[in-house]
Length: 231
Image 1 (spheres, rainbow, N blue to C red):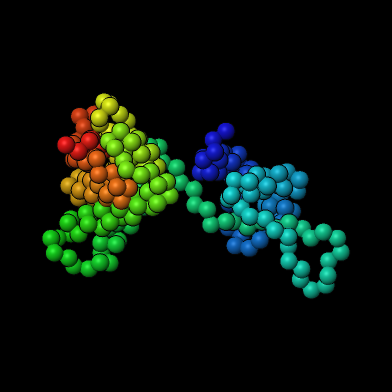
Image 2 (image 1 turned 180 degrees about the vertical axis):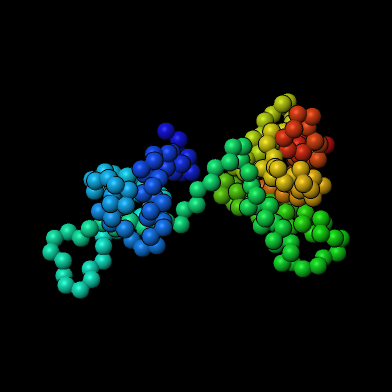
């Protein structure tokens, strides 16, 4: 079974009764007992407990003992369930609209800047890429990166963001998926410029000086950026 939390959560909600229980718990805005959940969807307490615990296992719900109110309770306190802050979204192929939105929001918050909106957005995108690349370099400590090691590391990093990297030749890294699609279709110059600056920033942050990122739209679609050894 997949270890991806989002996939596990979606699989858990594929069961109709479980999905109804989850919707009920979210709608209540208060901790819910097994008895209440079972009554809400017309199943037994035991079956409700089974589904609730499955939802806890996937991270969609959390469970705790019910707090005492008034007179001390004799025996074990019942379990109560409430939603977590987990947000589940699955895009196939992967999309990074949140990343694009963050870049554009930071651009707006930075105020007017010389060079216009596109140049300002690419500066923010590059800075964001540098931050992410530098964090990975600090974590992995890869040392000096030659072209081959840099291409391998770049492929791993860009895979995290849904670019679906592929090596058509030993000296070229292409990206089969654009995580910002379909927004690219609405403003290709802006989005591609942001995308290019972001990837170039990752290379700078991870100190992959042996590579260069160039805008080269592929004939078969995908991302407009390719990575090759620097000449």
